[in-house]
Length: 195
Ligand code: GLV
Ligand code: MN
Image (cartoon, rainbow, N blue to C red; front, side):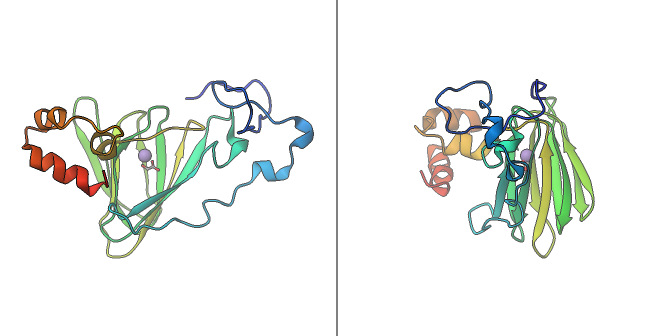
């Protein structure tokens, strides 16, 4: 859902002094084949973390050739039981395919209806723009999904981190009243995410 481009391509100059809605283009004389290819999704990152998952992004920041093209992809790796926690992408609809393992994939509509399914390798899902969604590895081994977005930089609001790991920290009074729990519960959750 990014704006349409006005030229064939515009390889992002990530270090340009000026900032626009996206990035300025490298001069054509500096563009070569390497600008249109990217190997960064050939390996997954470590899943040894609290969530047991890792997102590797092929967006305009890692793959500057995507600038102005309105698309990007992720690779998400999961340890057994691992979760890509509830999050939303403010700038994109997401489509994904499970390439390994078995994932519980779900999203929640703005009417708070929960839509979900357990998917195996080769099966696909879609997440409408902006809706909160997650994937959890419910198989016995590793799992992996490849996702794609109609934005060069979809952005991600990761709900648990936004609420419990923001800097500066959100006042506990906000979180105790929001979740109707004791301050100890809020402190306990905050401590899990390192702040
Ligand atoms: C999965 O939800 C992803 O954002 O790649
Ligand atoms: Mn997502």
